[in-house]
Image (tube, rainbow, N blue to C red):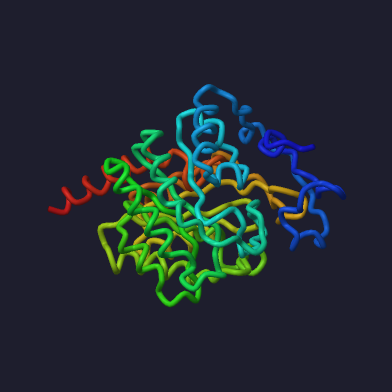
Length: 330
């Protein structure tokens, strides 16, 4: 059996053998295996297992919560959970999309759990979080894409932990008749929606999504509530060019995005999109410098950067950057 630690340290899980549990990605099983590149030293992480990690795991289990940290096999789980930082994944653990990069299970989701907002809010309060990140699977099966459920979670956290700042990482609400307005009106502190990759690679990497729809979603957040911070992220190492990444930066800035994250794509299994190359730390530093020059209030660019990695610390920096900018404009 291949463990989570194997995945984190560069060994991708094999296709399950006959008699094992259900395949996580049935839609990918007819694809040919792609090569798995050995990770460079700068991408290796230590196995989780600290007392803080175990305590976070216990709270997650007690409240019957799903985390993207586990479902997406995030390489930062050991660091984040040891500090009692966990990204809650709502609306189940089965996604209706089949993105070529994602390790979350694909299939027909279960009905929404009406008690989930309460349980998430109680866990946030119990962990004493100053900042929480809430994400979800795509729920194309729902008339509103899960927008009302997202809003209920935000409002429940506000009631249970009024001092906690809330960051949401949402689906694209594609073809949901502006359902995202319900989420915007719940007034999270940060509205995050990841563009993930450059437009040229969407059909291959994110076939169920539309680049310009996602970009427009981020723009609509600013139009409806200019006080909300907006955030978006890119994976690199999928075959994009530097010029394409710079164009996405320009597109984000045109949409008013405040915060950009850029991280290395890591291949979950041999059935997922192959890594084109490992982007070096120096290249990430160059991307960070370019993004700051383009006017982003906050930039996080490194091989292990993920949307919710260091989210609490980054939110404090983001708020400080806006305050400084406002003071300068007076």
